Length: 199
Image (cartoon, rainbow, N blue to C red):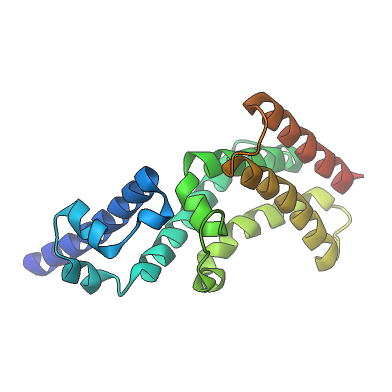
């Protein structure tokens, strides 16, 4: 039994090493630099062993995307938990979203297809819905006592997301302003949208 557990643990470690190596390669050379051969070289394995864990580069991208959504959801939940009022929760969550995008730039890029092609399968994974669900629930809470229709809630969510994702994307392709200006635009957008929900 102990040896079976050890084998499973070693397999999981190898999986994690492959993902870590992939991110390292991307951070150093961009998404175009990622290849199965480079991953194998990085962790000092042969390419066929990498294929035992991931059938192709797309499978690695999908796993990195899943990892990104889980980390983002964790950050959003932590930001929400620091506040009691829905307006403060939303502000903290969108600021956490912004911070995640730049702290985990490569993951964000693959999650949302910024400067890389986004995997179609990622849109179908349940983890991709987690960040939206967390924010959606707080928008509903902020709208109380009037509970908006699904369409109204959807409009508020996508207003937030399009403004903040747009600002992030602009900065990732090096067309943004100074950090101070970006932060001011971000806070102005968040507070304006919150006022429109409460209004």
